[in-house]
Image (cartoon, rainbow, N blue to C red):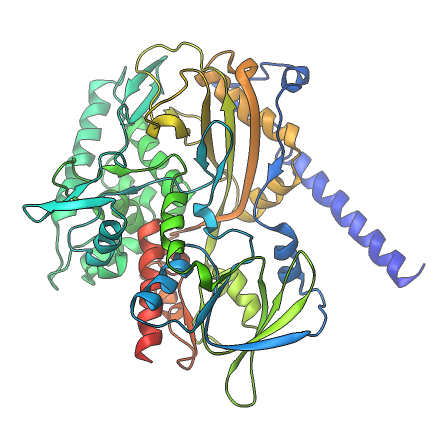
Length: 553
């Protein structure tokens, strides 16, 4: 047997073993359990009229970088003062800040054809829609940089009594949220309908606690919880909460209500892609206490959204720097030249052509599992890549020609069912001024958090399109009986590393700070995983922070 034949056989055995493990673990083809039984409501033939496929970030590029496949020598090179690698929110924010401060000698490389990272969006004949992140809240008043950006793009139209007045078309239209619980849709996501009084008492107690924590300040005069989180108090009374899980904290506080615990776990899954036991108590409390947005024309922490979700914000960030952006450009390797400059090998995944960019400085806005591969030749003292945990996600864009009738509150922007695997779906049409009563585009969100991220990620990439339908449609049927026959199209989008998870002792344990330190004033870092919380505001400020470091270096 030749070496090539042996290698091919080993790869085949590896795939067979992997598939066998997933099947034994019931991770590959199982549907979802609802109320104790597996709901297979329709035969496969019921799906025959549903069009769609599995999509996701550029898998070819990811595999090239992961496997360090050999590439050709660069066919040409060019120089630039600063190279930004990564076109997510952090990269776009860094580019915007440089341009805004008169610095124009930079390029931004993005591996995909379009920028945006997990804030990307799509569009079909019915509506634009989010593929990932889909909202922000009104900004904290002391967050001057974010308020300036929102004002610049008319999200904030003006100020009244020193309070921002938000464009009413960008504040989520009513009805905003609903929850399917105990057989009926209720308004709002905090469990209420059919909930026993003792459980309601615990819910009220927790909500009162977080209201106090919103106002709490440490001995240094800073808020205990703030956005961006680096502005939060260094007081050990609060930071020590990062050393225990949110689950342990709630248990110690005597919170035992299954309805309250479900709601808090929903919040953790929604923002962190993980369950209570996998999230630090500091991060769990920050979800509620960090945002303090006040407006002249909206309630505190009101939601801002668009049909395309945060894709709308991506377009605004990119608008002022579009001439600096190079898509379909995979940064493959970074090295230092003899004269102290940074050489970046860049591969076009579509054509396999390789070029070299020679830069004085680099801003890396890639997630750390990518950064690790780019910086094989560099040391990052005291930073441990392997301690970061990324939550895999699945989103599904579902075009329907009807929703059927339901009991209780009507269709809202955010729609969630109690005690089901997903965190529900958002209705992209909610922000349309004129809508088709029947035709809708729904974006369904499923964090894959029942197993270790590596296992869930492997299973996700092993499933077929039909197996994903088997997992998603039963839950939709539970929420909307007979909706299957109304589904015209379903695109399943896999986010293998959808977001950073703020595991115990990551935010304030020192590793995050070490990862943010520049290398020799030549390589700077910005990404929401260096905050520990994957929200727009954190990525936005990460980009500004790196740009300021560069300008001051």
